[in-house]
Image (cartoon, rainbow, N blue to C red; front, side):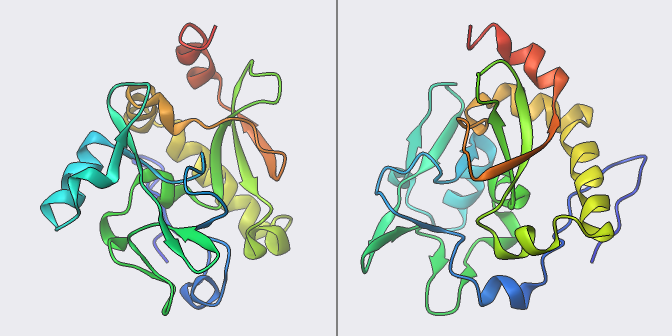
Length: 188
């Protein structure tokens, strides 16, 4: 596991790979047009296309710079086209988008829509089981530092479709004041 440098925050995955590979939550969706399908910034979608992704998989979003991935049917649900259900591996894992890198964290608007918040998806079995542990609480602080870093905040502001609607399965852990201020005009 990578340890973040306070001078330059990084994002690391706290969930052990073997836990992710045995889980059946991530990368699976109930509807073909799920609002929870991953959002890619323009740079992220271009990288995926350079590595063989079909450009038509990316649906432009309201912010004009990001795109949501088009899900594909798999048995009785839908999956990300970069997800291999047989192995639970991501075919673009090293270059997966910020939206996926953050999981089980979610950027979303508060229930009243007045603030941008960071939360932990309680549908993630690891997140739910370890939410109160000291290690996970430290990870929450590290993710907050990462998201609130100047470069990441600027990236999110430029791609505000990364901020989803309120989800009642996500436990709010922090209000992101700078993102709230930056997006208030857009969502007024």
